[in-house]
Image (cartoon, rainbow, N blue to C red):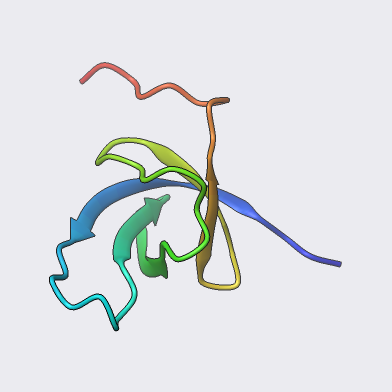
Length: 69
């Protein structure tokens, strides 16, 4: 069984070298993880949610809205 988790993007690491993958830092429940953005269909912004599986962000997730702070 596969598990994909919606996670909030907290940082996008800028990378000028096209030979290395674009990476974002994501967070869920205080746990942060770096994920690759190679196969995401549109680039997320900080605060967006993405579906993450096996270290890759697959697609932005519109099911969650950022809560007001």
